[in-house]
Image 1 (cartoon, rainbow, N blue to C red):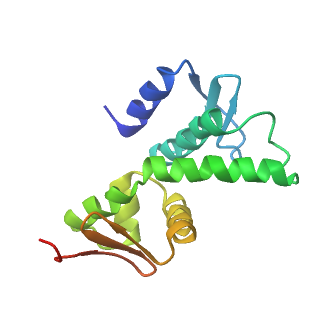
Image 2 (image 1 turned 180 degrees about the vertical axis):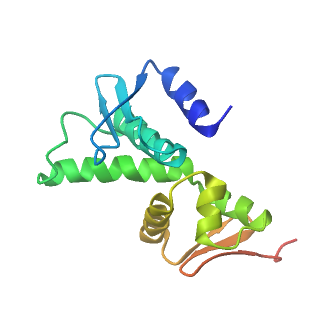
Length: 155
C-alpha cells in the first residue's frame, strides 16, 4: 500500500469521503462537509501533501475560510498547514533519513514522499517552533543548516 493509499484509508475511517476530480491547476484540494476533493492532475507527492492538509482542515478549522484577507481565516489555514507538516514530517523522520544516509533536501523530500516546497515549509515551521535546533531522544536536529547529530552523552 502506498503512503497516499494509507492516508486515504486512515481518513476514510473517520467518515470522510475522498474524491479525485479535475480541478483548475492552481487548486490542489478542498475540504467541505466531510468531503475532500483532490486535484487528480497532481503527482503522487503533491497529492500526499494536499490530502494531509485537507484532512487537517477537517480536524482543526471551522466555517468557510476561503477568504484569506480575513486574519482569522489565515490563522486557521496556518493551523491546518502546521498540523500537516507535523503529520507527514514528524521529528523522528529526520533521524530516520539520517540513518538511511540521506544527505540533501532533494533526497529527503524524495525519501519522505513530499514535495520540496512542502519540506521547506515544514522546516521553516520547525524553526519557528523550536529555533535553530531541537533535541529529540539522543539526537540534535538542526534546521539551519539542516542536519542531524547523534549525542553520545549518557550512553
